[in-house]
Image 1 (cartoon, rainbow, N blue to C red):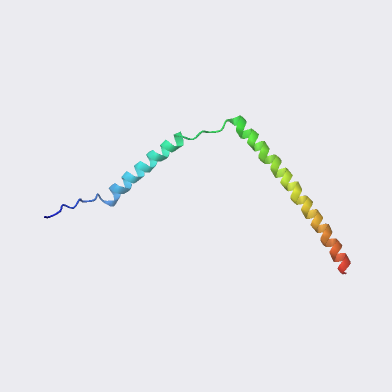
Image 2: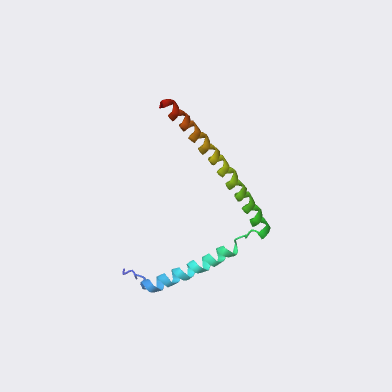
Length: 78
């Protein structure tokens, strides 16, 4: 019994079909995205900016405290 082997299409045909499927799937996934409203974006941006200021002030405070501590230690050691 001789089995018939199925001939594969060439690489360009397979790549073309894969590319078309990828683009179609990507388009379908983009349709599923729920975009935030401008109001939500600005509210979230405000939260982010406030957190940046708070963390910046905290790190600045630590820097000043450790700098003064180091000066104190260096003066004692000298």
